[in-house]
Amino acid sequence: MNKGELVASIADARGITKAQAEQALNTVLGYMANAMEKGEKVIITGFGSFRVVERAERKGRNPQTGQNIVIPSHNVVKFRPAKNLYDKVQ
Image (cartoon, rainbow, N blue to C red):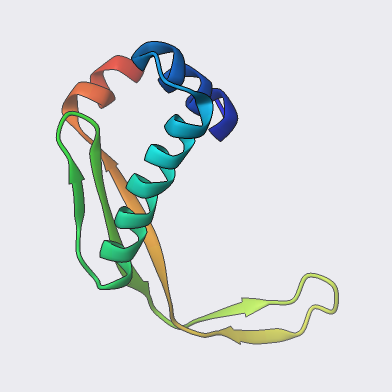
């Protein structure tokens, strides 16, 4: 399912226009992104949690040249599914 399909599903389920559903979804995603940008954990009960962790600097290799490189440390988003979701997809 992509964003357009999700918006259409929300609009059908709630009896609202696709524009209203997209605005609501964008608002929720925006708040989630802002919270994670501040380093906060986002927990959606029954679905899962999102958190930002720092990935340490590591050594890598350029596949085109074979040259060894250093990959700098950077932040990544981690998702951990809630038990309900985990059990559904098992």
